[in-house]
Amino acid sequence: MTRIPARLAAVVVVLTAATAAPAAPATRDQMLQAAHTVQAAQAILLPAKQAMAIWPGAKIDPNMTGMVGHEYTPMTTSAATLANKRTATAPDFAAALTKRIAAMGVGKGDKVMVVESGSFLGADIAVLAALETLQADVILIPSLGASQWGANDPEFNLMDILALLLDRGVLHTHSLAVVLGGASGTGLNMEPGIPDLLRMSLARHDVQLVDDPVLKTIVDRLTALVDAAAGGRQNLKLMVKVGGSVISTGNCPENLKYETDIRPQTVGCSGTTPGLLYLPGTQQVPILHLLNMTALAEQMGLPYDPVPLPMPGANIAVYGAP
Image 1: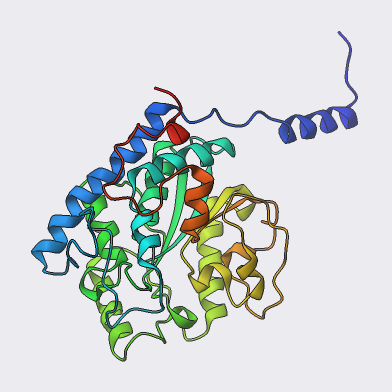
Image 2: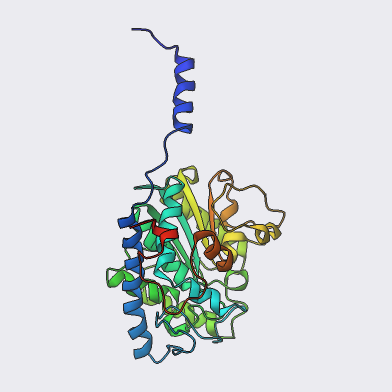
């Protein structure tokens, strides 16, 4: 038997790891499972909002998803496009995300950091449905701030919604920590009193609030939590950003150049406070940036702002031929 020199063996190991086959492509059944998870969430959220008298009505949410908020509430942080928010509620979006994430090699047990804002509730739930279907190990950080038409009801904010879906068994991911979101990560652009109201609301949930007047302190504390949960940031297989939370991008002007698709990082941060997507040592970790729903819908073969929502499984561009 021919012996391989130790130094050469080490090279072989490195090359083998670098060229390892990606995880298997998502199956049609997996894509359907993710889509059905979104439907199950909608079947819970719509009656919940109706019972609380906070559903905006069929004119705003014609598909009756329960995933679209009001144009303005006291916790609304910024302007947004209603059609984008509605497009993200399509169950097929979760199916398309399942296919795309699997194609990047993410599979069972892979560690994925997800930073979600309340701005895109449909996308928040869709990406969790996709990752849970693929059995990834999700490190979830919700940010409560929400733009127009998002999860912008103070009495039923993003953390309340995620907790409800967790309690009903629709989702299974527990949040690692939560931030208030909005300007500086502390809700400075919400109406006076709302940040304190949100702080009090978090007492209902078994989750750690990371809160500080200084954005860098918030990011540093979250970084320590992510490192501990992942066993080191080098173990992250993917980072996902839903919406425009400041804890994900910091004050880096480069964040405006993010594309929608998954890719390794190609630019650094010239700002003073990089967000979680700029953690040192993660430059080669792909990023999934879920914000520009017009571009995402076009890339994924999804109809834009459809009424009614397509039946899961019918879109050949997403699922392939039956």
